[in-house]
Amino acid sequence: MTKNQAPNPKSTPVSQADYSFAVNLMQFLVVPTFVLDAEGKVLIWNKACERLTGLPATEVVGTREHWRAFYDTPRPCLSDLLVQDRMNDVDALYSAHDDLSNQSHGIHAENWCVMPQLGTQLYLAIDAGPIYDAQGKLLAVVETLRDMTSLKRAQQELELLASHDGLTGIVNRRGFDAKMSLEWRKGEANQQPLALLLIDVDHFKRFNDTYGHPAGDECLKSIAKVISQETHRPADLVARYGGEEFAFVLPATHEMGASKVAKRVLESVANLALAHSGNDGVGIVSVSIGVAALIPSENTSASQLIARADKSLYKAKHQGRNRFVVLEEAA
Image 1 (cartoon, helix red, strand yellow):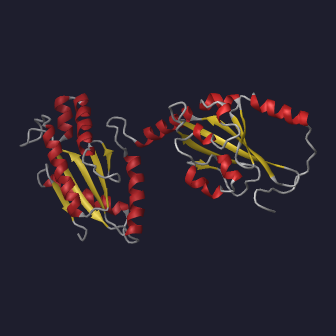
Image 2: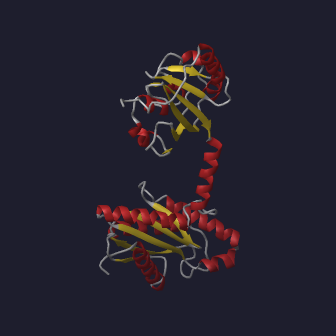
Image 3: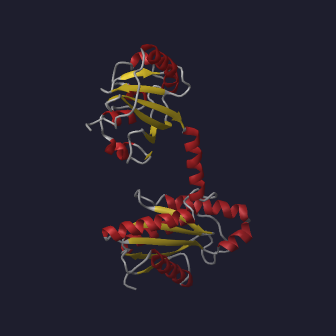
């Protein structure tokens, strides 16, 4: 069997009338569809495809310019990968796809497309199926498209709600756990330290009792905002750990670097100057911070790092609050 051939199917000759009927039928399908020949040139670009992409058939039929309907720069569509026998590139080009082990009946994939003619992004579900002759030689590839943008955005919103805190908008405990698991594995693979800050608002119950829960909510939102502004690297993460407690994950960071971040967080919270008469000797909202770092290994765990940061936080509170305490790696 040669390239672009399938097992020899049983078939009967197709008349010109049957062929014309099939072409006309495809032209008026409600499903956006286009067809490439064995050389990758567009044979059919139906009316629904014109409506979906904003690109008229007159501009693409007979050319290999169909990529212009979906992308700003030349890149293969799913049907091109079948024509060119490049299915190994699917992973790099598509955000999701089905099993590649059997391509004789086609392939399904999904991707965000920039849709240059429309000036908007669409998330498309794409199916590409090959058509072979009686000898198993590739004749054409049919690609059909479905606009899944609304469904995809709804899914993303649900995922965001599941991993983010509704009050502060930052990552919640579930998102924190996922981040810690990921960074622990990366740290173990690269033998890079992972640092953690646990940050607790001092005398927050007194704040709520004095100023009310709505004011308490605003206080937490303000603190979450200023702490988040201290994330200077893409891998850094601030999460609401629970109640009035926040967590700051710092990959590839030792105690010294984490201490500098903790100092900046203390200063940023102090600069908010939120009145707090119940915060003895300070008069404004402050935080206590526990700092710890570990190099991930087979003999350590993320839960150990959390426990060490929690122990540091406990010490910071009992040493008078409004400070950070570092639990050194060797401790």
